[in-house]
Image (cartoon, rainbow, N blue to C red; front, side):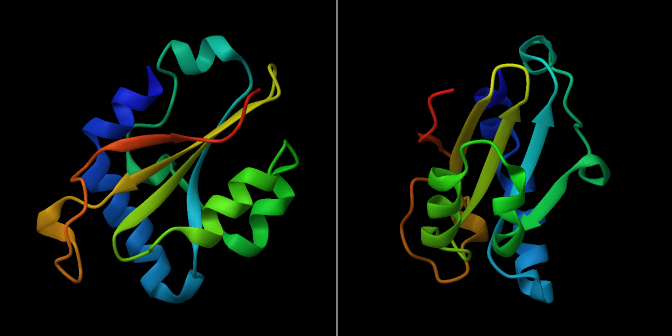
Length: 125
């Protein structure tokens, strides 16, 4: 449920993350935290940017749930071509991250990425 939502809003998520990066917050990720699996499955996530949270790389370690692979993702993505979306579900001790590629129309250097596709990364739960 969440991955398709990310794919649909890839351009908006990328712009949000890139603004934060360019404003001096550095590498990081957009973090969505849920108390229960049913909250995520039921679509109870903030749909507007005012409800989104960008967490700089230096703060990702404070998430506390199996964050080694998330920190690795934040360290290796290309801020001008991608953003990282981090999903945490406290109840299930579940974490997942997605790389979202910038839509070609938004790419800073015009290289060929895969458009607004989301990729599943690390995290078993």
